[in-house]
Image (cartoon, rainbow, N blue to C red; front, top):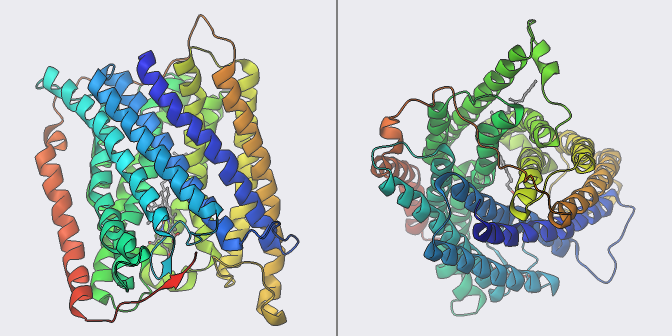
Length: 543
Ligand code: HAS
């Protein structure tokens, strides 16, 4: 990609590395505290640490990665950004930087211990919400620079289908605009006036509903860049054509339709939302599983085709032929393996009755560590393996590749142990979002302790993996330049010659369907909140 675009990408990636180190350290401490064997020093609060861990990893790391990766992606497939587009990308980056520092300062001074799901009634200092708002505005600006580049390619190449990777970036960004309207209206009209004392009370249910309107699409905003790598880069890395360009586009469009009107599946046990609307959103949640199943199918097809080309003839021996020594492949692949139980867990969570069992237990924490914490993050790491040397003019040396493999194995070991313990003890009733307690010696709580120890063991392996990751990424940036530069792998597809993708790239239609589904799923639940006349809450100050 163009070196000037590369600098913008690198600036975002440096934030990723810093966030990984801080957030990962907080994560290790988190598991140690919950094991009951460790107390936090210097008066640091449990919820302060938990907020830091969640915000820095789930919001800061991911957002900077996504903005950097997507900028690299459009620059790679559409050509360099022009001056205005690049400037917009930089303005977005600085908004995100200032916002992150503001929010971090509030967390560090214990004025925002309200967790990464920062809905009411917990109240943080107003500057925390201002900081987060700036971060979101920053993502809008950078995302817009990517969309403008994509649109410019389309107007310069009228009648042609756009490059797949750029189309995927556009889908992710449009989904992002629509879902962040929820969190933006919540912070601007409710949290900021309330936390600065301009209004006295807040509507708790409204903030929770608007948060989850945004919050579930957020998980696909994290996931889709990983899918971009799976669809577009992995086939090139293994050395064959991708399965189907058209099917990949369809899967992304289905994410656009079904990622947003499903947020109420996080509120299935919440009183005051009509059962009918919960049921409808559960059905829509089952629709959002379909594009992931399409993705699994396409990947299996790619891997089997590759294995057969290498001479595999048996039912499953193509599996052995995969490039097990290439860290760019192994990191995302290990992530895919995690996503099989991760996806199954999601289906369990979404099933109304089973949700009663797992909601607010540490099972949910296990679920999101094997979705965002493994498939997504390991794929981000795999992408950084080629992206960092690509933008700094280097190549992956064999020792760096070996480190990448160790990173995948150690991460898998740590995450495997930790999340398995979380899933099992969650089914035994252990709550999420709570520090270590023996609950007055209660028999049930005694059973949880050994699993909490297991979580700490997993946490230690994960921390070792983080040290490997940070060392590796710094080497990939700082290592000696090379005459032959690492490529940003972009595959061709078996159906590359299909010129017309039909309605799939008809943006007017896509946006109309998206908005229509949102209106169907949310108009009544939100109007009911306004009409039921429940008194506002003064909330609980956490600063
Ligand atoms: Fe989830 C809670 C439902 C996916 C993240 N989820 C969360 C929270 C987070 C999160 C962060 O319905 C907690 C929020 C909080 O703090 O309260 N989730 C789902 C469903 C899916 C799902 C139905 N979640 C994700 C992804 C996430 C994520 C992805 C992050 C990136 N989730 C829920 C529900 C809750 C929830 C409820 C609320 C629970 C509660 O009560 O609080 C689906 O999208 C999953 C579909 C995925 C699949 C898997 C496809 C597999 C693939 C890999 C193939 C492997 C290959 C390699 C090819 C069906 C694509 C194999 C090779 C071999 C040789 C074997």
